[in-house]
Structures are given as C-alpha cells and as structure tokens.
Length: 296
Image (cartoon, rainbow, N blue to C red):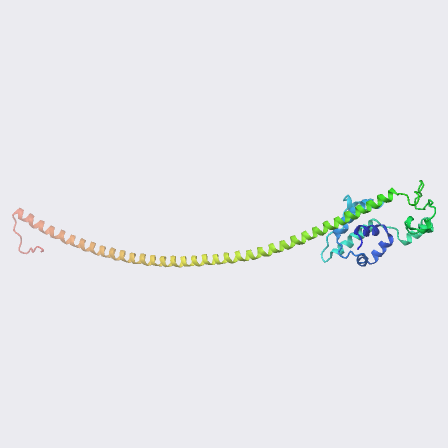
C-alpha cells in the first residue's frame, strides 16, 4: 500500500493522475489501496504535505494550513460514507491546485533531455560509466547557472530531499498510527457509552418499577384510610342523630313537666287565695256562709 502523503503528492502535482481521479474517483482510490480513506485523513494529510510542496502549490492550499477560507464538510453528510467525504475533500484540493495534464504538457514541452538521462540511473551501477566519469549537463525548465556536480559526487540537495522525504514519511506513519489509536479510543468510548446507556436503561426500569409499586401501596393505604374515615364519619353522624333525638325527647319531657308544674302552681295559688279569704273572714268575726264550699 502506498503512503498517503506520496499518494496525495502525486494527485496534487500530476495532471494525468488528476484526470484519472476525476474520471473514476472511487476506482482510483481503490487502485492505490485507500478504500478506508476518510475526510479527516485527507484534511490532516494535506495540512502536513502542503509545507513540502512547491511554493505556488502550497499557497493555493493555504486554507488547509492557515484557515484562509472555508473547507467543504469533513464529516460525512446524511446518506454519505467516509469515502464520499474523502472524495469531496480531494475534489476541492484538486480544484485549488490543478496540475498540467498530458495535453498541456505537449503544448509546453520542455527542452528534451539527453537519452541516457531519460530514467534515473545510479551512476555507479551503470556500465556506461565504468570508464572515465564526465560531468553532463541536464536540461530542465530553468537552466542552472552553476556547474553541475560530477557524477557520483555527494549532492547535499538530494540528501536533504531524501531526509525530508524520510521525515515526512515517518510523520505520516506516526499520524496514521495516532489516527488509528484515536479511532480505537473513539470506538472503545462508544462501546462504553452504549454499555452505560443500557445499564442506565435497566436501572431506570428497575427504579420505575419500584416507584410504581410504592405508589400503588401508598394509594391503597390512602384508600383504606379514606374508607375508615368514612366509616367513622358515618358513626359520628349516627351518634349525633341519636343525641339529637335524646335531647329532643328530654326537652319535650321538660316542657311537659314545666306545664304540669305551672298547672300545679296555679292550683296551689287558687287554694292559697281561698284559704286566705277564709282566714280573713275568721279575723273579721264573720261566719262562713253555708253556700260556700271551699275547695279541698
């Protein structure tokens, strides 16, 4: 499997690779072994890679490193996969950094290079260089103003480039390892959260059941107390009615006796008046008439 930084470097600097990608993004990515690519992988890798690209290309990709501009959504949208988000990021990066395609290269074809330098060859392993070593000038798009180093001599720029490539490759591998660990941590956290959620659901059902039982017991006890209170109230009403009946009977009896006492008092008063009149007659010396019959 290719390194993701090498994969992106070729895609952002090679017009032919960009054309093949635009023709079949999913197939192009699968051919390079990145079927599990995500939008976060592309964003982080471009952020690292942009610092090692040519200055003009790095400037066009500054939105990944400096936040100059808004990036497309990194996470998958509704109904999308992680690969769809990665393709969206790659299309956006290519639109910022279009490379020359095969047609453009034909129109602006650089000066031809000597036949023996069409492919990179280690000078020490080429039998053509077994004899005398001679410096050879190689034509590039920009002609160098300095003498080229003799073949087989130490090239500090090439060594620096190799060292930088090694550093970038190690950084990419470390980043992929960190991303893998982060994904593992996220998956583990999701599993733990799911377990906690299930446990909380079970606990909630248990507490709800206990609360329902306690509520039913309290309600039943309240109903029992209400029934008992109703029975006591009914008994109190009966007792009050009996007391009222007894009080009425006693009042009626008292009224009857009061009438009897009044009648007896009236009778006694009449008798006292008769006795008094007889007594007065005796004091006056008169004789009681025969017709007068005092009441007994």
